[in-house]
Length: 256
Image 1 (cartoon, rainbow, N blue to C red):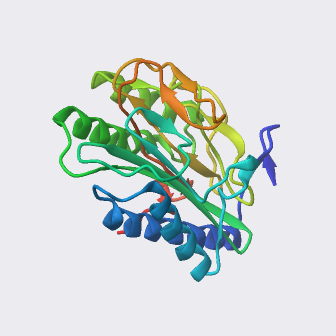
Image 2 (image 1 turned 120 degrees about the vertical axis):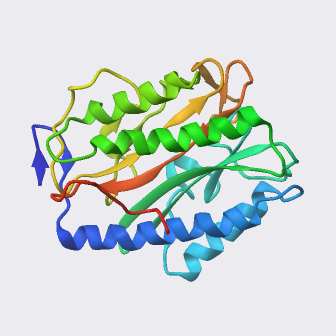
């Protein structure tokens, strides 16, 4: 089913059940990685943990081979915003690391990101992590039937900027379902009251990407890793949600 002259797919209850199962695996994998993140661990070790977890649970790591991406997770350190490629680099005390990962289970995708402290980090870095996470929750206050998509975007931007940080413009959230990236694109900035009206069955990946300094970014020579232009820290927080007919959205990738 499509809505409002756009290719936004509306999921039925059975499809949302499948997305819930995929999302649960994604949330559990994040918890597993959270426990593994410490000084001295390589990003490739984290990638191996995630791939094994997904395959052991009958899922496919969605990122592996997606558009040619070579690994199962994105591991982005310090000034890396998104799409960091796991390798031999080892985490150091004072780093922050953003882990973005997805799982495909029974044909449906879950997608979520978290940013973690490595050892003892600066107060500013911790505040960046906290504001980025909280901006997601400020945004989904408006992820309800009847609101418009940009109401979410505006709430994220307003909260981030009120805390002195900036919202990345060049990368956005997205619809999600059988494919990791579906319509609609979901910026983390903009004026309220624009875009598609939200209806039950929409599944969305809301993902604030927040920088300490400028929102300007650039892509490294590996054609994947996005970094801040000014070299200051960035954080990323994402969950897959579904719009319900009962008020608040359901977060499909958050494990309590």
